[in-house]
Amino acid sequence: MTRFAIEANFDGLVGPTHNYAGLSFGNVASANNANRVSNPREAALQGLAKMKALADLGYAQGVLPPQERPSVAMLRTLGFSGSDGAMIREAARTAPALLGAACSAASMWTANAATVSPSADTADGRVHFTAANLCSKLHRAIEHDTTSRVLRVAFGDASHFAHHDALPGWPSLGDEGAANHTRLCGAYGERGVEFFVYGRDDLSSAPAPRRFPARQTLQASQAIARLHGLAEDDVVFAQQHPDAIDAGVFHNDVIAVGNGNVLFCHAQAFVDQPAVLARLRERLAARGAELEVIEVSSDAVSLEDTVGSYLFNSQLLARPPDAGGGMRLVVPQECRERTAVWRYLESLVADDGPIRELHVFDLRESMRNGGGPACLRLRVVLTEQERRATHAGLWIDDARYAALTDWVKRHYRDRLAVSDLADPALLDECRTALDDLTRLLGLGADLYPFQRNA
Image (tube, rainbow, N blue to C red; front, side, top):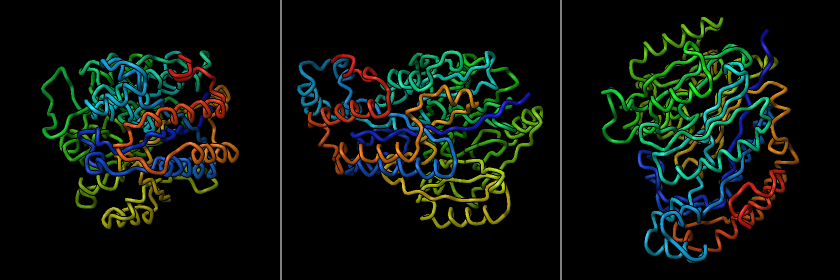
């Protein structure tokens, strides 16, 4: 018997050190906006506004806290010594790029936090989480310990949730989390098809990008499928097209997004795309569902416009039956500003296909660092029992939104230049803010290293 389940979105709260240090090679927006002055307060408020809007539409919307930054543990590991302030000043003087990595607020993009398999798909009937090792980028490779801790607090009931440590940080096991994972299904509570997309296969001579690195490996995706107890016929592996990676599509969620039985993708998303789509159709049909593919040609939207607008880094959300069914597409403001993209989207919703409604959000602070609506959220399919077992303090409602908005306005700067990362006061501000946040969300007093070491 099918159990009723919903898809919840857990958005990352932008941290107080949000800045534009240009750390992510292969991410065009990150490189193009390097050394701009950021506005952490506005970034966090933009993200919260999206969360609240989706909660008001009736979606299960949660929030995940930012990480402690600068990471003094990283600086100490790399040979800096003395007080926290002394290490920050010395890193700023002798290794500013390392300080930039230690200050990154990139954990806001929780699509990279972990890969999640719902209980309908797993062998033991629990929701499985594997934190991503993110080993391709130094500033993100330091996240997974705290990510695991946060997820274990958020989803703590071992009778419903299973947690796996990040894979070893070896190049052949590069894992970027749910940004390269999509689940397709009929109903959320039914067995689905888990679609893993990788950039490179380290054990073969498959085609590879030439300009930018491929971050996700087939070996990492296969390991996660095994850890989660997924049956072979519940999984499809596909290679991301090297030309897309070289155009700046550093994760699959920049060129494809799926939800339910709908896959919205560019025609250059995957290697041997017709065969990939045929496999997905076959697997989904075996579960009694028909795959609906919206495949966008390069004539309609070029790869350049795809990357510039983040068209596919949008959230595809199921509309309730009383709204007429179909899907809503949550897109960044940049889609409206690109003529070809907006023309395509207007024709898409006019066609009476699966996507019937557009919602546009201003997420400029995130977009300038290369993250759109889909980057900011981790999707977790939950039954009603599993939802009740999730930490209650993380769900967005009117009161929590108001409290978080007030918290941001009290603790965040409205201007942060890369040179400001050398200010040790920024660490104190971050710690004060996070100490307050853990109380506000009821997360306990030992979530962060500075709390445990107090």
